[in-house]
Length: 173
Image (tube, rainbow, N blue to C red):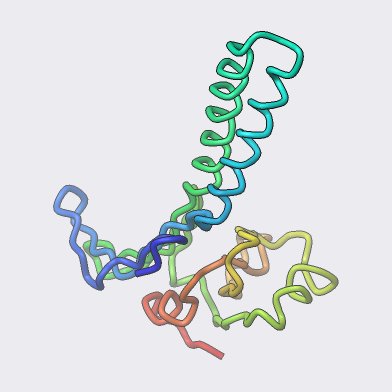
């Protein structure tokens, strides 16, 4: 369990309401250090707001800055990546609000930190589906084989891309 960036769920957790089994799950939270930096920025803003004014300006500015910082960091920490198995045995990957059945995935591969810049830079296809979190060093690539979908592949940030792809049950290269 990685407290700073989220945790992976134990395998085969069953959701009784939908009849699906969660094979892999991770929530991509911002690192703890970002919260500490945000607290420092809020303190500086609060201090600067009261310079040459009454002390209550510091409180008002601090509350507003803290609320905005918390809102931003929580919004960045909401992305969830999971692999579920439906009642018919089909596996589905969910990344953020998007989902993809494993049946349209031709092959998969792990993008190590050393190849991440190239995968997101000059080699990136503009039609690719990308969920990128800069604080997560590795990614998973899912190459699609679906004639009805113009998306050539998915690139998804993952703390454990090997486990994610193994849960999907497709060939890993």
